Image 1 (tube, rainbow, N blue to C red):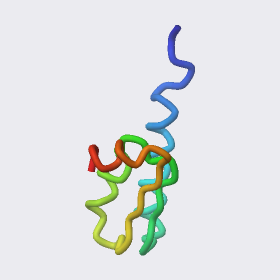
Image 2: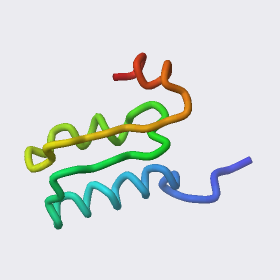
Image 3: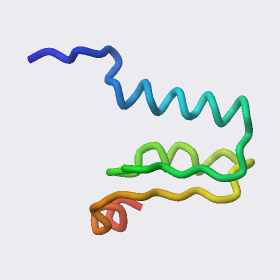
Image 4: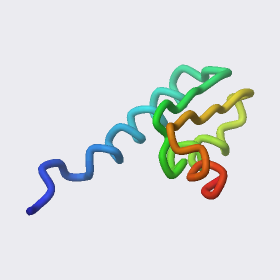
Length: 66
């Protein structure tokens, strides 16, 4: 089965959030359902973010990936 979205939908979502952070410079960002923490890893380099939080139902997975 070929992907429906190109690029993958999660990558489009991540890029939307990154663009939003660049434009609006929020001090706090929460990633709900962060899974493997890919978005968090990208956002940690934005200096204007003072608090970066990831939430997922699989806590062990978060600890392993961060």
